[in-house]
Image 1 (tube, one colour):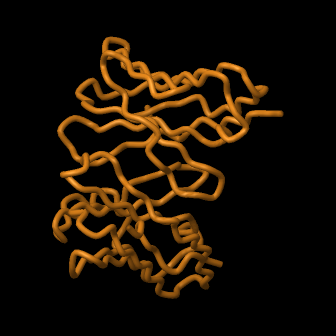
Image 2: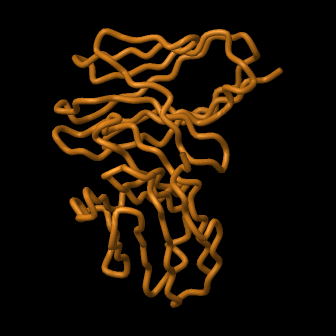
Length: 115
Length: 110
C-alpha cells in the first residue's frame, strides 16, 4: 500500500507569492493532519480533518494560511501571500480509527523556503 | 510552559550502551502517550505506545508515571541504526490530535 504522498518535495519561492502544498492520504484513512516543523518551534499541528471536514484549525497561524479537503484522497494547504517566516518543513499525516487513531502515518514532507 | 518538554540532548553514546530519555507533560488530563522516531531530514514514525503498566518492544522499554506526569524511553544495547531524534507525544485530554515534544537527539557512535 502506498504511503502518504506529498508534493512538491521542495519549494523555493519569493515573498508575496502564493504557495500550494498537496497531500494524498493513505487510502481508507479518515483523518488527515497538516503539521509544520521548524528548528525553533518543533512540530506543530496546523489543522486536521475527519471525513473531509475540518475539525480543528486553531493551529493555523493566520489568515494567510488555508486548507481544504475536497475529497477523501486529496488535501491542499495554501499560503497567500507567503513570507520568509513561513519557511519550514510541512508534513501531512493520515490515520484511521480502525487501525488505531493515534498511529499517524506521515508523508515525506515539503521543504518550503521563502526568500 | 510547553505542554510537552524533553531534554534536547544531544546524547552521544557508544554502541552497546544503554540510554534513557525523559519527557514531562503539563496537562494532567492527557490520556495517551507515544514515542515517535524521526531520522535526519525524514518524517516522524511511530516507535511505540506507552502504557500505564510499562511496555517493552525488543530493546526498547517505555514507562509512564501519571502521578509525576513523566514518560521515559530506555534503549538497551544501542545500535548505530538507533541514531535519530526521539519525539515524546501526548494526546491532550479528549482531543484527537497529538502534541509533540521538541525531541531528543541520539547519536550512537561506533
